[in-house]
Length: 266
Ligand code: KIV
Image: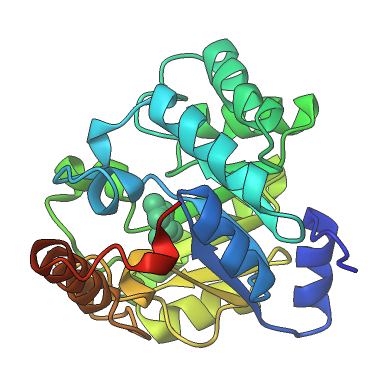
């Protein structure tokens, strides 16, 4: 019997100094297996734009794709907290449409949403979402939806002043009501300083070991996505070769007449 992970469980993990795990999933079967493996939070990351749909950046997908993948993941998960990453332009234009788009993900089975960045407008969006009953995960440091304004994949928070700025933003997100904050590509010591000065948990995405949790893209962990591997990701398997070998063997068997066998026919 499983006990569903909620935003309260996540806070309890931090309060009790227990690390928790966050991993992305985009489809039903993967979500089911990583849930069974004990992953605490499953994120339908907008990274799916690159790793599942083959686009160059996360900008290319919209609310329609997130609807489909959120539904698929939600149908596979029983225990983990399900978080949908809100795609580019789905929460940026005005607060009512942000609430509507985020609310749709909750209707499809997500338990929370993630939104990137910091501004007075983002704080308004977070407050309104939380008032509506939609838990929000924040995302600071390197924020891929701001790739063009940040000028590339650049480490953020390198100096004391820059770390202080991220902490200042994080405290405002916390005050607006986020239940956790992803820190992406922030030096380990800066992330430690930020984590120690926040009440809500921080989730490291290339921000070192002192955060309260770790997040990685599942295709990196499984060794499935082979176009690029971030320095901070760890490959635990070689799905790319596994898929290749299975497909190759099937191809050979079909062509040599070894498939199907007598047991595989009616
Ligand atoms: O899109 C994503 O998968 C993410 C995480 C890696 C934090 O935003």
